[in-house]
Image 1 (cartoon, helix red, strand yellow):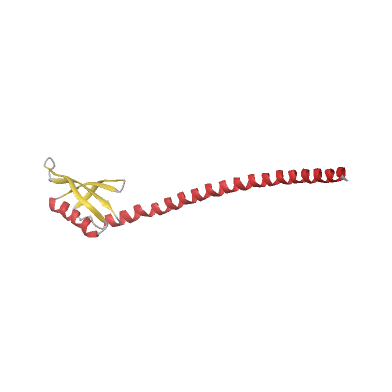
Image 2: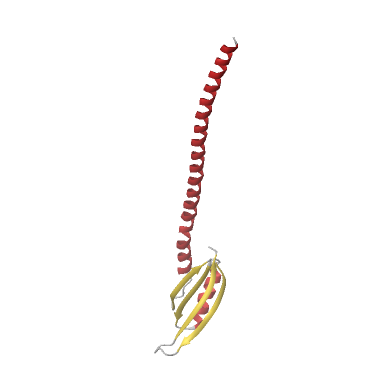
Length: 138
């Protein structure tokens, strides 16, 4: 009877070990699937961030285009870390002042500052060249 019980218990142990091996394999697969799911979530988050950021340049361009006086033109535009640097030329200092006023009045540009403004007397028609910095909060 003891030998029979031992044989039964040995079979049960063998079966349990086989089941354990199968379960370990399943757990390993589930772990891989969980890791893949986490990786996919990260990719989706990056894609969403990129998609949201794509609309910003369009909104910035539209807001900016609406504040440029007719007697002023932009020759340089640079955005870094939320700070915008605009350079250009105008027929008068008044046009530069109007441009800065328009930026402030739009409500979308903050911290509008004149970095440099100078009259270029070397040209037949003297122009004012300027550089303005601001932040866009569209």
